[in-house]
Each structure stands twice: as C-alpha cells, then as structure tokens.
Length: 167
Image (tube, rainbow, N blue to C red):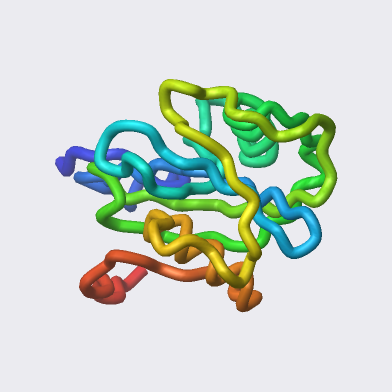
C-alpha cells in the first residue's frame, strides 16, 4: 500500500510528498501616476522598497487579506470590492518556501497612508510608476513590472520547469 494523501477524493491517486506554497498578497495603491512603496527596516531587505503586502491568514480569502494588509501596514481602509487583481507570480527563492504572489491594484481607499509598522518599515514614499527606485526588492519589482505591461501571470526564480506528468 502506498502512503500519501488523496487528491480530489480519488483513491487511485496518491501523493507521497506535498510541497507547501505560501500565498502572499501585494497592494498597489495608485494615485494618478504615483505608486505607494514602503521601505523595509531590518533583516535581509533593510532599506529596500516594497509594496504593502503580507501572507494569507488561515480561513481568509485573498481580497480580505489584501485589504487587511493595507490597513495594518499603511493605515488605509479598502473595500475588498475596490481591489482589482492585476498579476499573479509563482516565485522560488524569495524565502524558504516557494510562493504565489497575488497583486491587487486600488485607486480608492479611506484615510491617508502612514507608517503603521515602525518596527518593520522605516518610511513610505510615492513614486512615479515608470521611475521606481533602484533598490526595489526583486519579487515585488517583477509584479509591478508585469502590472505596467498588462501581463497577468509570470514565474520568477525557477531554474527549470518540472517535466510534464501523465494524468
């Protein structure tokens, strides 16, 4: 007998190893041609720019997570219905586990952005969407670039694609 987990309730299909993928949500707060970025404090990305973002919590949908992260990090209230999905990226090498990053754009929110996470963020800045700082972290930079180009999906950090499997 094979050990593993069943896929889709089909007892003939088992998986002996399941990789975890973290789900990240990123919020592109745009005002005309300007994009809000946060500057990281501490750790490997100290001083580098990033989007308001975070991981999906258990039992939380991605729109609610994106709105929550925007409120926690920059103090703005966004109705999840005002978020537009603009890009998904499958990333390897941006942390200990692969991740799916979902990018959402918002042009409407309540409140003025402010730094709500002083321990993790050293400041905020509005940047022209087409002239972003050089020290933007690669992962969000790839998502922002795809957003500017109208590309809905990309991969980053995968050295080779997995071979196709028979189903």
